[in-house]
Length: 468
Image (cartoon, rainbow, N blue to C red; front, side, top):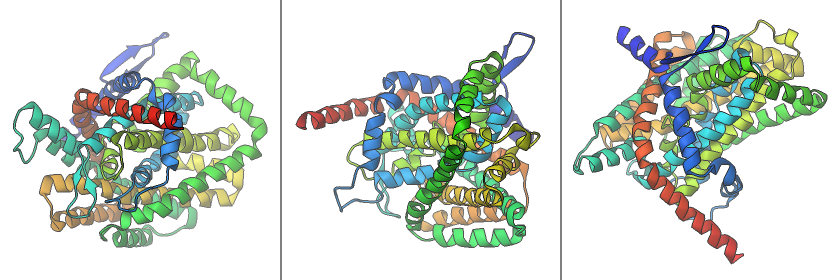
């Protein structure tokens, strides 16, 4: 226990403390010091890819499949899987925490952080495509950081016959630990939400949630088919309900945006909202949302059968935009368009539910509960898709290990519905922190390969435009 909390404090605690005028201070954790500079570096190296190639991201996302002989899933389906795990509790409770701590200005810094994270997402997804391999169990392809870390380490130390690389093994184990922790958090959040909205006993929620999840995850290739339906519906409904709220309160929008930008660049808000609440809270809580740099999304990106690695990189970069700029902004607008006196003194999901009740009455409370259910459910089956390649890397190609991990995750989901164990939650936090560190160790030196792929794809874009 002491070792776990020592690691937790080292990863998430204030490694560097910066003094502020007036005697205050704010701290930067190890992960902030790794992810933010790396994101800025990748943004510069890709020549501001999130902005410069945004039209191409849209084009690739809307592109129709031209071949019927695809092996595995399409690039768009890989985006759906990664979006399923990105669009989760962080989009609801995480945004509430960021705005509560940093004020409206936190929203602006969330947008900036998303732009930086998009470049990181591009690099890691492109590398996942470059180092993917055939999947003899599920068909199609598999890969992710464990695989490109393995390739980098064996190449670096000149031993291509290695079965495992220590760093890759540590990444895979960290991922499996993290996803077990998240499973319990999901169970607890869903059961609490269902009880608050409908007075459904946690045991009933646990049985129903685990039963439905088991039917999906224990079947060979049902995950992607289910997410293909669930993700567009849940994200679309949340977006359009928010759009209705925005239109209904259109007269308040100028004041909201003025408040966002004014507080983002004020002294107190630049500290509390920009770094304290968004970068600190955004890494600690929001990392579960946009995942850029953690190495989770590349596990889905590697599974895509796509004609150019950089295209999947662009799709995953767009996924960060979709998650943070669109969905997280929806949660922020729901809060900021509600009168301050209606949400004063509230926090977490209670705050968001109170805001929705103001906008839409009792329907708003029910809608948020069902939204959390869908967001959390899709996250659970999405992380088990991620786990496939990591279990295979550690245990080889066998169904026993694949099934054993799925059953373990289902057990954690069931337990989480009935009780909250902070030890397991902290274990999940430590897991994702370790994943990020092991991933970033090789992401920086290997980024040259992703940049070469990007330049090659840009020549493809030029030829396509010339042909028109």
